[in-house]
Length: 268
Image 1 (cartoon, rainbow, N blue to C red):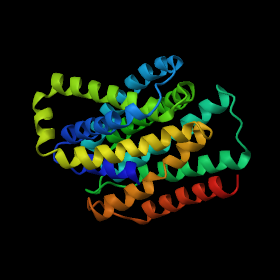
Image 2: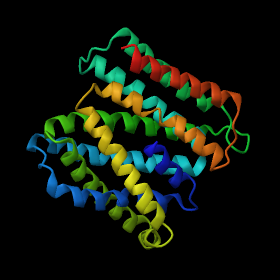
Image 3: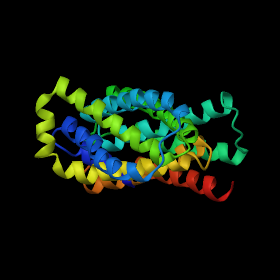
Image 4: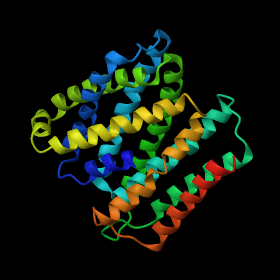
């Protein structure tokens, strides 16, 4: 829910670059407050932190461009739905993680349910292939940083300490990007982006802090799959608050996603 909220704030704003910058920079105050009370990440996690900064920035840039072209209920499902499938494939083939048959089926059902939303039409009644491809690339970045952060948090010995450093580094990289490409955006964040900075930044920090901790407690593929159920909340927000169209295809896809969650949670 938290993840869907900050994405809706970005998509629903007049300037998605300002709102995206506000969310990323809005993570920093919470990270600075928490850092003194958590251990420093172990040195072994530093390479993962560096790689994560690159991957998160790539994710943010492609998500930004996707939202310029497509609806929340089109872009979000493709980006989020492709990630668990990529993570699962990598985890099983490369990392040697064992998943039971029912867990594999559940992850596939979740992915199919979410990805099938890409077949529906956006608010103006048209399909947007360009936005779909950008969203799919975004999903690749999501899968990549999920794997890197999952392993990084485990090597760090402190999931919250790891994420605090990641949030601060991500904020610095975003600030440098905005200064280079759109100097006025930083000024606008203080003004019209203030609500997104506070609400969106806080929601994003809490959401991914929880996910980073979960990566240390369960297989990364399972955490990633359950995280993508945020599409259910994004669908509701897109329809009722952003006034995007609702049709039977979206309802069917959402129910398929929920079926996958039930399989994953109760029939392990």
